[in-house]
Amino acid sequence: MSETTNRNRRRVITGLVSSAKMNKTIVVDVERTVQHPRFKKYVRQRTRFKAHDENNEAQVGDMVQIMETRPISKTKSFRLVKILKTARIPAATPEVESIDSGTSEE
Image (cartoon, rainbow, N blue to C red; front, side, top):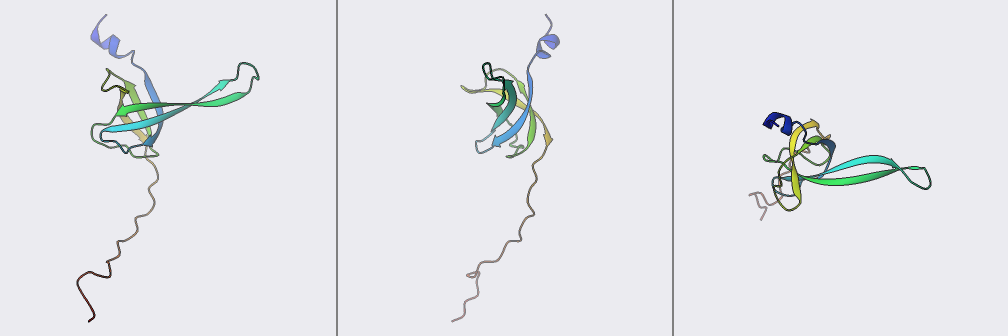
């Protein structure tokens, strides 16, 4: 089996970034619906994957695509492929100068 065909068999998963607090690591939530075996009702199941984000590009709320790779750490064996949709960032508020910024009224 050649290298290219083996690489093409890697899992590619789309999910939502739920945490980006770690350095070069993001946590991606993947939701799927499964039918309950007894009650036949569809329930949502969430799986969390840790993915390697080399440049710390992804933020919380981004829709990302991750790909399976060799184990990078104990719990991390996916890497960020691309950011499909960025999260809405609220309008930046202008920074207000602090009251103690050099001028004192004494």
